[in-house]
Length: 430
Image (cartoon, rainbow, N blue to C red; front, side):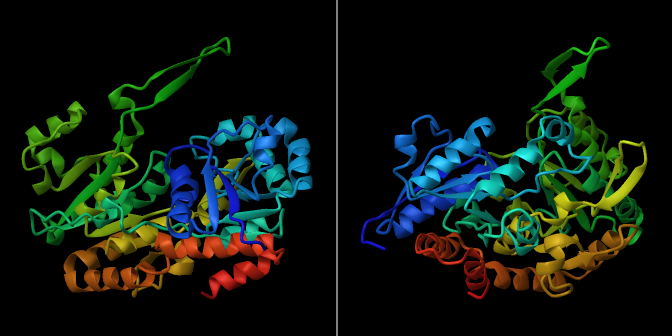
């Protein structure tokens, strides 16, 4: 290695959530903390026809794809011949379950096949956890784990907890619109929770992320398609809300509040945070962490089984690989904000959460969620202990500056031709 700065091109897949977590924020941290060694450029859509521009970099680290799939063989070969190291990053499994809103699009456009090909042609692949790394290794042995991380100097993570306006234990779910089948796992326990007179007025359910943006594609009899904006009452979030309110069983007792919820308008309601259920609307990416300021306990249900129909019409159950390889981000967020976490005993939650110490793991979806929720509602000291233990587990390991220091080591070692699998072991032992 020379004293010359290492030139790195970071190519996010988008400027949304994953683009920031996996590409933009780590790139900015690399410049801020290790700018003496690295010259970092972020480009969401580099011109792959301008090879002179692309060849100036020592490393090109891209998320999921780099340029048109039709020219990937030629482009990657040319860049490698010029000494450029190509690193692919991926944080989600390339084949979503049949219940995922994007399943048909991914299948019809063969996006999984394109991702696998890109993976195979890359010099290295980075991902979030060793669970996912084991899947990726089937196609590329040079897998490096770069976990998600949070910049705890950011305002939304430094924000203070909003005072609880009641004596209720605040239970929250914070997520996106693709989780309907995950949330359905909660239905039996939500029913039991609202029916239990002992717990009446002792908990508050808060759903975070409510959104009425989006579109619906309608297929006509002739096969033509038309797309229109969804109407407020058509949003999947209304179905989410039915789950978290047990079909509004308690909310309906307050006629005015129930009518206000059904207006589906983004406006404040007097004393909303004194109700048994609170709807929190979606926040911008730079503010969404503030959702955690309104809760005491975070829920993380994920479906472990995917059911699909074969070409012969048979219904087959299989492991939900998409959920199994999900990242540790929810664990990190809850831990950094000192929240108690109740999660599915599956995937990364099974691996990282110590049941009864850093969180509660649920195996039985029939009443397991209910029993765990009841316990943390009635035992404030226990839920605080779980929250504190989780915080201690994540506070240093997943802080962005620390994770970025490991990224800097990885980049340097790659250019010194060290083996990627050795790098992975070194990172895990830090």
